[in-house]
Image (tube, rainbow, N blue to C red; front, side, top):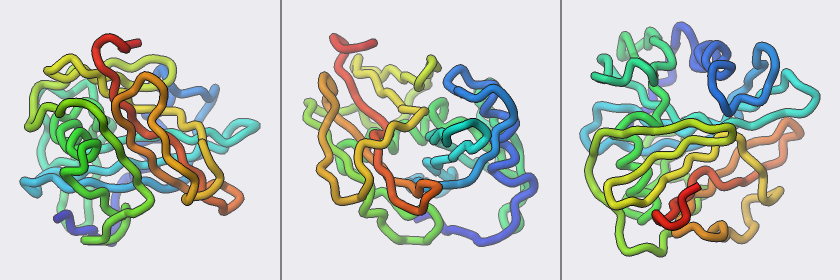
Length: 224
């Protein structure tokens, strides 16, 4: 169980993302982002060593707000071989130095996200300790996903990140979120051609709730 410490971070997560987001191929803005933390959820690392957060960051710098999904991992030491995925370093008021990574490249996050698809783990509230997040929906209709960790080779494109798994399934993380319903009670459906989905929620600038597909799974025959 991850313990949420309400303390200081220097620089803040949004400070790091303001510099990092424009370097991503799926960033749609043209200048410096104007970011707010709009929602998301967490997953627990079974070993208790890595913080796992799926953050929705809303960019208000353009004519219309854009909502980005940024999965992040927080570590107490650098992750070997993941220099390309480093978002930045922070000083945590309780835990000390923390290395923040793009979680799509972190084996711990990928393993726990696959477990979430199958319902083997429970999504947790973003800012509360030991509190399930019941707005997160998941489904999987395949034959079983790989368990455990393996070296991750993620690839970014114009709208998301794809991560191949050892069994040929492709995990796709949707970076630019497209709301599917204005409230949290709308039906959840798996996108066409997918064998699984994770749907999450966040707060819109007008204080209403939005939902969208955060991640999908596709068998090898349906890879994009």
